[in-house]
Image (cartoon, rainbow, N blue to C red; front, side):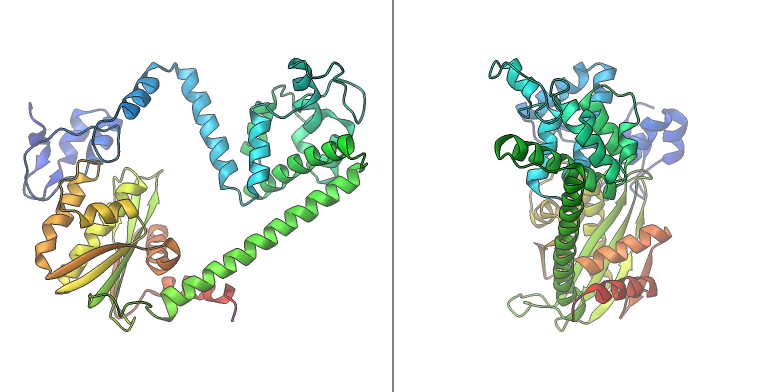
Length: 410
């Protein structure tokens, strides 16, 4: 076997899975089968895998060099960093709290120990307890007042360890705690530091119970604000997806197809969520398709775009507008240029299907306006099967949409 062509079934334009599995190591065979193949045969062309568009850039070359010059322990540390900061930035808390926690991780908050190191001050004892030097560990873990605060919050477990480094302690707490606990923990760090500054610069004294009450109160306020924002957002979804199709009169298309994807990175599976509506907003069809060996959510969105086009063809549509919440996939699908990215094979199939329509346009839409398609995809991913229905949606999707309606204000 000398050519890649010998690994492809020309009739079905799919990879020959049995040959791949028997020829390559399991992880290599899996990676090969995740490469999308266009249905139409085309000449080979050079693609740069370091960038999403498929074109070379010095920036991506530099990143690849960094990747291949790291030692294994650096990879572990890098993964820990990514996991921690991903969880931190995804928490629904104020930016000022996230930034404070970020500063703590880099030890760049102005504790007395840091100020002494920079020769700003001479004395570095903790201003509260006066027992030892005030560094990050002391402020957020070891000061008697801080220990009492964590105890009042039922967070004494975060102190029962032998971890010395502040960074290791923070990552350990984030690994051990659920999102709700991490939410409260970050609020605690921020208010402990705020109270320390009020004590130092405003001579405002708060005991541990006062501080813990402030943390609980502030955390509750954030949750309340988050709930109000969520309800307002769901209200918009109800109007956009359930009530009626809005702002369609100025569009030249007769039928609208909304699509979205649900992706599971652990199983490399994704599902398609498709909704077809007429100009009055009535559902003409809904569909979900299960895809295997999908590399990323980016590829999953492209597969759904292809399914949307094929559904339009099978329904005999002459003109339609296709709406998705991936700006990149929408732009690539609308383009007539050859795509060189990892999803180039899928985009080529989408472009080849355009002549079947008298008119077809791809539009970017907000995630909040695409909820029904997403719910269809999400429910199909849970069940592990696809379906096709005319003039409606499945019972499971109806139940999920009903739960969303119940949370909306009247």
